[in-house]
Image (cartoon, rainbow, N blue to C red):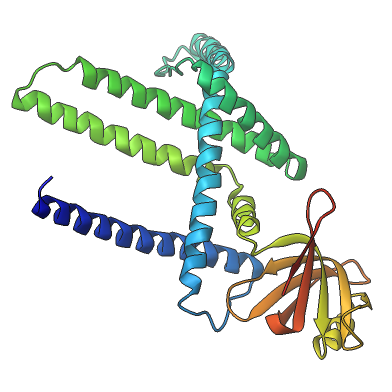
Length: 303
């Protein structure tokens, strides 16, 4: 490789890294904005250095969501016999309706392709995802199963287009244009597949919560030691506290959900008051010590 080619490759690599950084900040910012709307809090005093945290949020969310999409698509392919049985049942009822009303109905049957052996592994994870989400939201089971069917159906259609591309052996201009058209349709189908679980599954909030937990910005159950005057504010809002080993100026709040930590200068806490209502408390990060219990009984201390 000559020097000019090497310089061009280095310049291209720099542009790719710069573009990836911008996309990461944009995606992380969008996820963070959605999360802030959910918890009704927007961080203040956000620094330029928080852009790295945006990228971490984007990577965490994208990783979780991509894995979920692959698992749901695989589950939809594995459930091919179920979809085809339901289709047969629907067609049977449609024919019965045609006989009763003497009116012909138009219906184009769909086809879901068979799953490969590798898809069965991801399908197991897909079933686990649906089970876990269904524990807290029964409607998520139906919406996620519908998402699995939709993803499998579109993936099957995409594979049919791929077969057509391979069958086009000609190198003339018409064949090249047809290949380009089919490949564009494949890309569109892939993009739609990617967004189906997010738009139809009804679990976008849970996925964002998971991404925030993964980067350490959220904790579901923690002990937070708050310093005066926020110790008094917590008591005034009915949040029960206990004696803190950090000193008399502190109070320990147990089983608190840390909604927001690490962006800006504030920590957002949510606890349950004496009446069982959820109460949100915003504390400057230098007035709070967060102790998060880890799996296996380990304890993680955060400033």
